[in-house]
Every structure is written in structure tokens, then in C-alpha cells.
Image 1 (cartoon, one colour):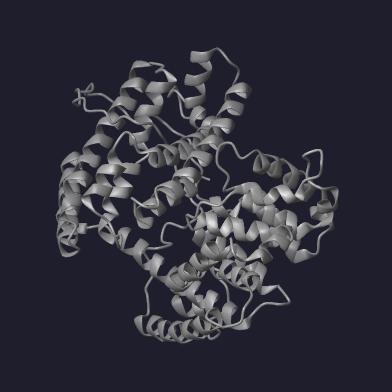
Image 2 (image 1 turned 120 degrees about the horizontal axis):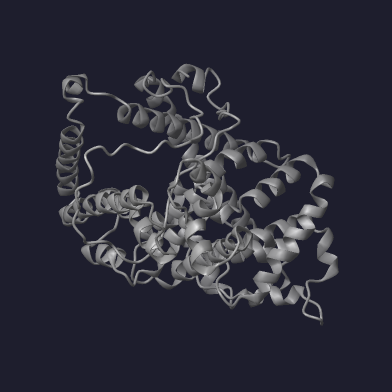
Length: 483
């Protein structure tokens, strides 16, 4: 799709993804990085035949893309103008706490909250520190209570889940009157997904809201019905922000009480960024025709490519004053090569590793160390101490993030991986080692998956004083991709 078709004469038309659009990226967890050397493999090694879903994109989806810089500049100017109008709305004096919370949530879910990080941060900080003096929150209904709780947790504030006890009866169950409050139930459902270990009231909330939202969803008005269906499929805290914004824009557009300025701003910003992403994918998809004669020596090409890539990376890191990140990034590539080799050895030898061995290896093949280290020059605030923390075995947030990815992948890709040959899957390893059925294994993985999210949610708040938000968001978004 060309830029003029994408943005058109009316720049506020939303983009349309293919109906089958989905992200399926293989990820993983554990705590140890292998340091063993690469043993030689037999010379007649052939890659296993695997079965993968075809891409939803055409072969030339990105290679044929061209970006009109003049059009992009025009829309950048329009975005800046709308941004100032939205800032004025956000900074309006006299707004109640609930009005502020609703606006902040709307901006973030429309995908434009990143434009106002300072303003949003200041307002939430004020709400958090003055809530003990502001007795109004004691009279908040379920919707408002859950919204404030979720937003503060998502912004790394440690807030108590005891605020929900007032919605329970003498028997410790949620009041029956709540079962007809669809918006309140939806708000509580979303809030319950930022829970940590030991928060029984939120464990009850997940079961309570899931049951009643499923019960009433077909009877809801169209816009709310779509929101509930999406939430049941993907809670907002666990969703990739840019993809969730695409969904929320379509919901907000049909909302009778929508603010037209916010809607225009969100659509234009989404399309503008989409063009940038397509341009970046186009650049990454280019082939170097000068290298065609060297294709038989594929290992030399790969090695040279990696060296050249990290030369550019080193230059960029130096410009950003983050040259200290380069050794970590290079080491991450070495370790992933060793881990892939270990996996190949299992396949070629028909070996069945223990589940623990499988986890340790797949934390490396998940590429998490490569992803987070190469992204360091782009982070606003990062230090060598932060990287040391990131790479340490005591990094609970990284372990939780990789476990989320590992168990999501284990559950979702077992059948497909099984069709690829005799490569052992995580389900195979666990079932054989512990003598349980596939169904029991999947149930256990679902339990481990939920526990990993609770672990991460806890560290999201407790690491606020020592680790930058940028670094923690890297790990959060990594987990969201697997979801």
C-alpha cells in the first residue's frame, strides 16, 4: 500500500490489518548461560524439515514500499498541532480525579500516551501521594476503584489490593449487585491482571469477572461487547501496546461520547508510526546484490554480516555514550550460537533432555539477551550497573519475562513443533520426566505462566528505585509479545 493510499486525502482513516494478522514469535526462560565450546557436527548435517504457517504478508510487502517524505512531514506537522491541543485538554484545571484517570487511560490505550509521559507521570504521582488525604476514593464505585488501582500499578506504584474488600459481602464473596455492572466488571477484570502472589481478592476477581463477563457478553451494546470480547482474549496489561491501540481506536471511534480531537490525533499518530515501521522493515528486507557470488560460502557471509552489523552498532553506541554495551551484545550472539548448537545435538542424537536442561538452553535461544543488549543505545537512561543487573542470574524480572514467553510458546506451539520431526518439545520433556499426561503438562504450564506474570508484576514495582523504567519496559514488552 502506497503512502497516499495509506493516509489518503483523509489522513484519519484507520489502517486495516489482514484478518489473519497475528504475531507468533518463539521465546523462552531460565537462569544459566552456557559457556561450553562448539563441538564439530557431522559434515552431512541437513536441516530438519519443519512445518510452519505461511506468512500473512506477500513476498514484496515491504521491499516494494516507498515513503513520501513530504507527505510524512506534512502529517508530522499536523500531529504536533493536535498534540498541543490534547496537552491543553490533559492540563485542564478543575478536573476531578476520576476525570483525570479516564483521560489518562484513554490516551494510553489510544497509543498516544508516550507523547505526554511527563504530564501523566506528574498527575499520577499527585493522585498516589494524596489519596490518603483524599477520602473521596472511599466512595468510588467498582469501575473507578479498579481503574485507579490498575493505572497506578501499571505506572509502578505499590498500591494495596485491599481497596476491593469493600465490594465483598460478609461471606467473603463479591456482592451479587456487581453482576449486572458490565463496565465495573470489565474494569475489575483488567485490574486483576496486575496482581502478584498472595492477593487472594484479585484471584477471586479473575474467576468472578471472567464468569460474569462471558455470561453477559452477548447481551451488551455493540461497542462494550467488542471491548469485553477483546479483554477476555487479551487483557490490556498483557497486550502489545501498539496492537492494542489499533483495537482501541476502533472501539473509541464508535463511542458516542468520544472526543474528536483525541480520535484524530490517535489515528494520525498510528498511521504516521506505521509508515515508519514499514520503512524500517523495507530497509531490513533489502538484499546486497554484490554478495550473490559468495552464497555457497554461507557461513562466511553470515560471519561477515554479523561483524559489519556490530561495527555499525559500536559506532552508534559510542555516539550515545553507551560503548560499554558492545561487549555484552557480542557475547550474547556467541551464546545464542552455542545454544542453537546444543539444540541441534539433541535433534541429531535423538536425545531427550530433562525439562530443566531444556529451559536453560531455551532462555538463550529465545534471543532475550540479544534483544535487550542491542536495544541499549536507544534507551534514554541506562548504565553499566543496569546491564550487570540485567545479565545476572538473580534478575527475577528477566527470569519471569522469559518464563512467560517460554510457557506461552510451549502451550501454543507443541503440535506444530511435533509435526516438524523428532525434535523434543517442552511438553515431551516435562511429561517424560515427571510421568504425567500431555493434558496434565499443559495445565501445569498454564499455572507456571500465571505465576510468572505475578512474579514480574511484583518486580515491576519493587525495582522502581534501582532499575530504569526503560529497561523494565524492555522486559515487559518482551513478555507481551509472547502473550
